Amino acid sequence: IMYHSIKENGHTQYQITPEMVENDFKYLKEHNYNSVTAQQLVDYVYNDGNLPKNPVLITLDDGFYNNLYYLRPMLEKYDMYAVVSVVGTFVENDAEADPHIPDYSYLTWSDISEMLSTGRFEIGNHTYNMHTTNNGRKGCKINFGENQDEYTDKVNKDISLLQLLLNEKDNISPIVFAYPFGYICNEIQPVLKENGFLITLNCYERPNYITRDPQCLYDLNRYNRSGLYTTEEFMAKLLKE
Image (cartoon, rainbow, N blue to C red):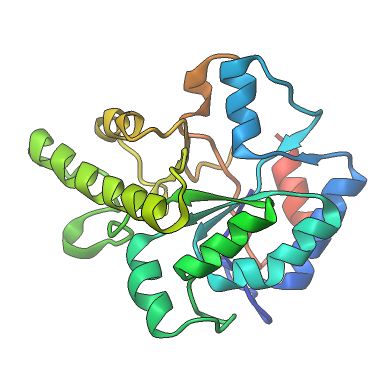
């Protein structure tokens, strides 16, 4: 499941209310679905680990402060976990300039540290500064006719910069990468693997089939949780597959 911003009166395609999130969690619990971590998926695939029945990966993109503000008590209450994928410039610039307003602020470095200390959150990389459609670029997807070597150098510098900052600030090296806007391309795959990513997340709304083959963790599909649907409507859409 892919969430974005959680806010009061959050009834848009990329916003959802705290009450709706809690209803989602209640629904999953009551229907015997089990929240898993990204690390559990990696351990299952690479280390012959185990997964519970009906596993669900809860993800949130962009790194809004409200992810911590509203979600922390819910994750603890329902014994769930979440992967929050952050954008480097949002943390360094937007969050520091105007922190801790649930309606619109982004996570600061200290917020990320607090998230990690709970044991309920994992942090993913959502690029340092490629969460944009400026100058005709679609996130970190290669442009038509773009020189591949130059492209590889560009995305490697961007992605590795956020990895470096997260390591310096919060002592982590994320294994999850979320494509901005879900724009994917084959040319970025070697860069992601070289930077240590074992799981990548897209935005295609269809089921995933987890096997012991490591390739199954690349380009995991996710269902966007729009605030325009009730929990029952959203789950019916998700589970009909």
